[in-house]
Length: 125
Image (cartoon, rainbow, N blue to C red; front, top):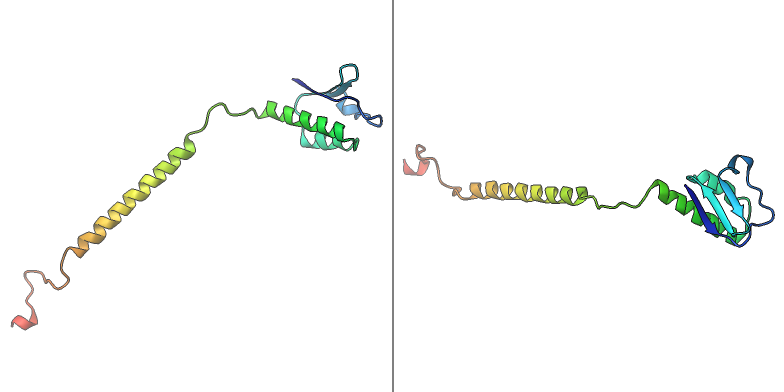
C-alpha cells in the first residue's frame, strides 16, 4: 500500500538512497511525499538525517505513523480477558476470606476451659 502526505517542496539537498527509490518518492506537481509499504524506524532515521527542514520532518513523521497503522491497525473489539481475570481473582479472594473466617470462628465457639467429658479435673477428686 502507498501512503502520501502534503509537502510543498522537497529540500534541494535531499537525494533519496538508491535502495529506497522504489519505496519513497516526491511528486512536485502534486506536492506529495509518498512511501510504499511499512517504514521501519531505521529507514525513518535514515530519511530523517537527509535534511534539517522542519516541513520535511513533519511530512516524514506523518508517513511513518501512517505506515505503522497499516501494520498494527486499531483493535475493533475490546478484550474481556483482563476484566474476567480481575473478577476471578476477586471471587477467589472472597472465598478464601470466608473460609478463613468460618474456621477461625468455629474454634472460638468452644469455651477454653471445658474438658472432654471423659476427663476428670484434679479439683473434683
